[in-house]
Image (cartoon, rainbow, N blue to C red):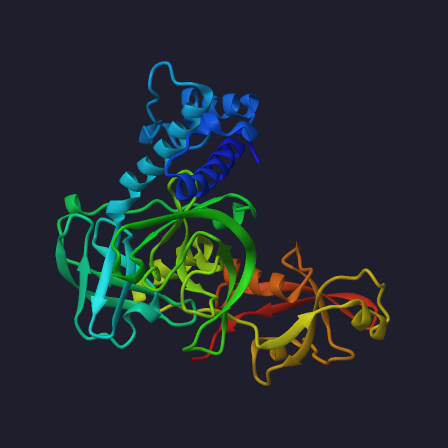
Length: 384
């Protein structure tokens, strides 16, 4: 993590501490928080004069700091400026989606009026109303849906000048602990921003309308609530790294575990929905599990061997046609795909979701009866 990113994280910690003190005492200033230390405050303040490491210079999001401000005040001003300017830049891109079955969020994809949201937000809707940050309300028509990735695309008829498309970043570059910013419409409260961190990566998310899971999902403690679905999860540059989609909560409200569909999947699915109305997911036709020490021993492999054990091969599927073998006690162990290491079943699923294409030939490296084999497989299209 670079130094500028550390500064941003320091800012967020300071903000959280200040929020606690404000709730208890009415007000607090960073200069009063002796635990922070003058050196850390000075480092944070330095970001004000060199913000390029946090936000693109062309967006001019560097906050102004009052003349004569101390290091603590400068740190607070920098944090507030970064977040408020991200909100000003990206807030107009986020929309509220309403219909007779419920409501959620979405965001402007391009100047042609395409709006991205979750499939579950618009599923079963008849007439869909899209409300923009400036109060403009227009009707949206469904262009394409993909239940397996829980993504959907609407289109509105508005002049390009009224549309503010988002900028996407590469979610595969995220690291746990990095800043995460969500903007959406929780409980119908339009244009709400929440801030937290990336709390885990590589989660798998179940989708009610399909038997498949969404891989590579981002977990965040930025508050995600009902109505946030279809909104944006942003990095400190104000770029979209995910589409907020779900929470784990016993009370159907934020409990610090929210999930976002990663941009690496969004970038593959959305253009296909715009062009074709649907997306063809690559299909291998296996079920499997992560190789454990006990499984490795049963297969006669070293205790430290890693990989994805193929437990079952679907009859008539691409894996079966290629000759891959499945068994709990003697199945093939996938250790790489096209040269990329596979340490777990999640690695295999994520690789196919990120890079796999229906009809494409890929090479699987497998361990079978103690021998290393290369098995070419032509991926199929996931059945409906």
